[in-house]
Length: 203
Image (cartoon, rainbow, N blue to C red; front, side, top):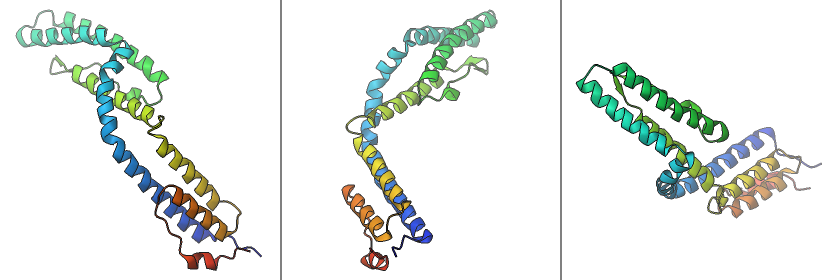
C-alpha cells in the first residue's frame, strides 16, 4: 500500500519550502531595490504632473509662504489667510482622495490632513513625502509586472506549485522528488536526503 507523507513530515517540508522561497525572493528584491529607487526619482516629476496637482501645489506653496511670513511679522488678517490656505489645501486633498479610490497601492489614510502647528502651516513637506512614497509604491508595482520583475512572478508560481504538491494525495517520495526538481528550476539549494526518499515507498 502506498505511503503518503506524514503530517509532521509534511509540515517540516512546507516550512522549509516557504523559507527557501522567501529567502530567494528577498535576495531578488534587494538586488532590484537600487534600480527601483532611481526609477522612482525619475518618475516623480511625471507622477506629479499626471496627478494634475502641480499647479495646485504651486499655488498652495505661495500661500503657505505668504502665510508663514505674515504670521512671523503681523497678527492682522491671520484668519483670512488661514481660511484661504485651508480652501486651497482642501482642493488638493480632494484630488488625492479621488486618486486613492482608484489606485490599489495608495494609502488614503496617509494623505496629510490640514493642520496648523504653532500658528504655522507645515503641509508642503508632508504632502511631498506622501507623493514620493506613493510614487515609489506605484513604480515598484509596475516594475514587478514588467519583464524584469518576471522572475519574482515565476518564483511565486513555482512556490505555489510546490506547496500544492505537499497537500496532494501523491506518494510521498514522488512529492519530494518533484519539489526537488522545482527547487532546481529556481536555483534554490534544497537537497532532499536520499535516505528520506528511501524511507517513503514509491510503490
